[in-house]
Image (cartoon, rainbow, N blue to C red; front, side, top):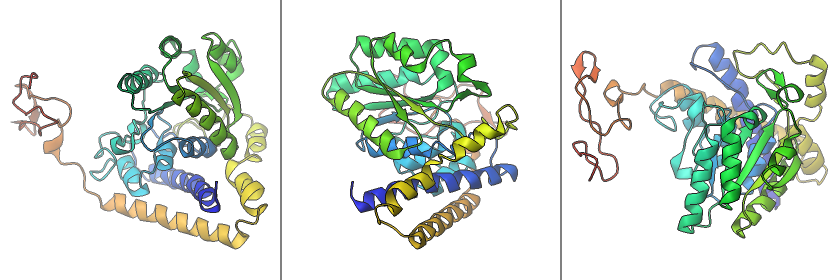
Length: 347
């Protein structure tokens, strides 16, 4: 990678970190409703993985998804507006924190049902295989997802069908507040071995290590060698969500992992060591990132609430008699694709 690409990766990790820190503040101010799962500490995985993929490769992730959206190129403005539930968000305020989607960027977003997105990701991969698009699907999940039935079904299907998919476990050591050695009966890579699937373990706190592992897996998929399973060992620096006081984890454990923070680690071991940037340059990048996030907050604050008359858009093709808004029967939804609002579904 050249100098500009390396600096871009650093800036993207820093953007995710600052964005998440400010999102926590906005949640405390009740600007963001519902649940909020922050990505602090895991930035190297999303940034490293996305840098290894093509722009039209498919990405499906779980509900800890803000960092992935930003790494994929979604604007901080659109992501923050989505968190605020506003009309200028990535999905017009419909998805919120746990369901960020950007179809144009082939980012199929976060899923709130743990493990529920894995079969869908296999479906995307099989579609790419059938249509011969050459696309690879990357499916990210937490370590807790690997104990769920859909995980095993998805790995089985992917291996049976030789699907071009990368299963990427963001193994942050905890399923909510339950540590891996308590919630899982076997080591992570043994789960892939059960399906005779190619597997690697990678340092999820090292952005370049993640990039290289995903590059290898993507190349295997494009050569027709089928699915890969990556166990990215990482750590989240905050509780499971903003509702989690994080009292179950040992404070010394958290402090030890913070010593491996992927952002200063990359700055020290790559950018400064190779004389690509100076300390002054790093400070200038931080200032630029902070300004971008402040701008995103201001933008989200000014973005309008979604109009009530769009309440049923993209849900029902044809209204039924009891759908009302403010006591009045709803208007017909907007036309979607080739089907008209009055279509019987055969158009």
